[in-house]
Image 1 (spheres, helix red, strand yellow):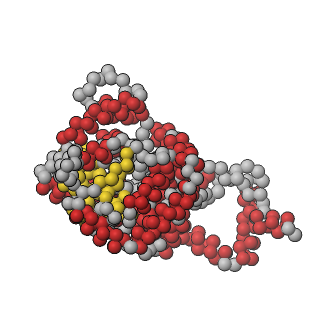
Image 2 (cartoon, helix red, strand yellow):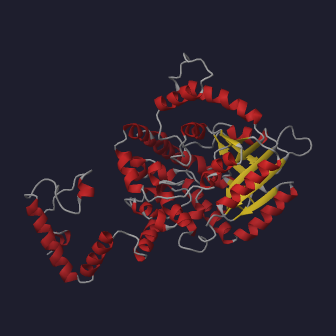
Image 3 (cartoon, helix red, strand yellow):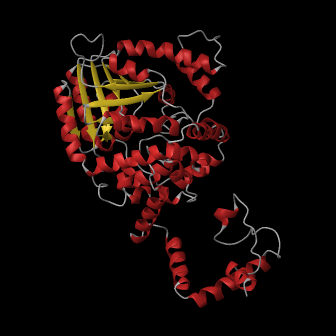
Length: 473
């Protein structure tokens, strides 16, 4: 049922991404669209860093007592008339959703944005069961038309340009006048709204993700900028919430603390346009809402992260800030990473979920500039955990033989300081002469992967340590 996740083609994918002119044009919008806005939103909130500390502590406390909070959460959901489904694997979660759909003879399902559903490959499971899934987030709707997966965890179509989207709309929405003007972004949004409005009304079941689950009240929380999440969960007779185990917070107050960070970090907004709290099915006297409320909670390897070197990754609130600020992501986009979660957070989470043997390239795709940790609202030490994955890859002999041999050679010299200084001094002088004493190093064997895309200045002839010793006597 589920696709086989793999990131083994990362190097080949990045090579294609770097020469893709349309992709590079789209990615050039990331700094202004996300990075600058986040900086302005952060500067307007003096207590931003204090909130980060509070949010980190909230999640650490919750993860340390996850079993107790889930017991409370399940009891509150049941008391409100809802149902909780516990699923260890993605296949189990897909089966739970499909069974709910079959029990209601559902033919059409509308979906709010959910990275968990991507992890489950839910759309394929629904289609196989004869249920049509319709993505209602504008970015998700666009990539569904194209048969693609999201390239960003909050902006699924960030890899596309307006002319590509216009072409897709004209090819798909064939019932509309061909002479219509779609040059402006607002026209594209209006057209999608027209199409999706019919889908919202006709849907038998609505499926949303969850930014948070609240143990105190049995509530699920979603944030959107389009209102599609509200229509998805309030119009159909059945609402299904998809969440992974780390989405839990203890109280409403805890949820609001994290919400103050979420939009500011992701999109540079003080708050998303819509922040929706849902607790159970419609009650007597409610003007709208579903008759049934189901919460499907997926583990999929996350309990193994508890108590491990990677537990802190479970603090992630999926704001996308680490992606937006990562020079690697900005250069190659999200599809190069090969599975659901791209960027620095994916470089840590993906190996945790599918194994470092499948995703070993990802933690190596980092300059360790530290920007991801610097902007993370939950203060997740992403560079440290990427180094941990590199170490595990090396220990299991999964890294290339050339890398292991090079590190072993370096370790041999590093353990012998005099020999190390002698060898590095000789290398500095040799490379200085090789380059003619000036210019760039362009023809060094084993360094082609570096010099092909960037300058490598020639060494000055002496090592830093030698220059320091000479300067300080």
